[in-house]
Amino acid sequence: QVQLAESGGDSVPAGGSLRLSCKISGYRYNSGCIGWFRQIRGKEREAVGAIDVDSGGREIIPASVKGRFTVSKDNNNNNLYLQMNNLTPEDTAMYYCAAGFYCADALRASEYNYWGQGTQVTVSS
Image (cartoon, rainbow, N blue to C red):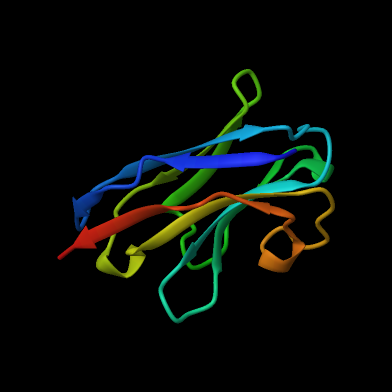
């Protein structure tokens, strides 16, 4: 059974940085995709970065956060990370990590089979 557990959410001032971690168990890093999404209450879940395992571990970052967010993974401890720099109040959201066994589009939430419970990030102005 695949389980994901996020950590690292916090309250930071604008311009600050945070690194979120996701501990993944029961998932093999040899296919599919793993990624990070965020959601503001009342809005759809938005991708902020993913790794397409089927494409050799290619990192995919959407234009909305490109240049500020990066995604990485550590196969030794099955952790997925989201490094967020130069945060703004618009980055305030609940952040989720997810894993999918097959992903035609790694930035689409519907492609993912398993989700963590989320970790809150709050950025103050």
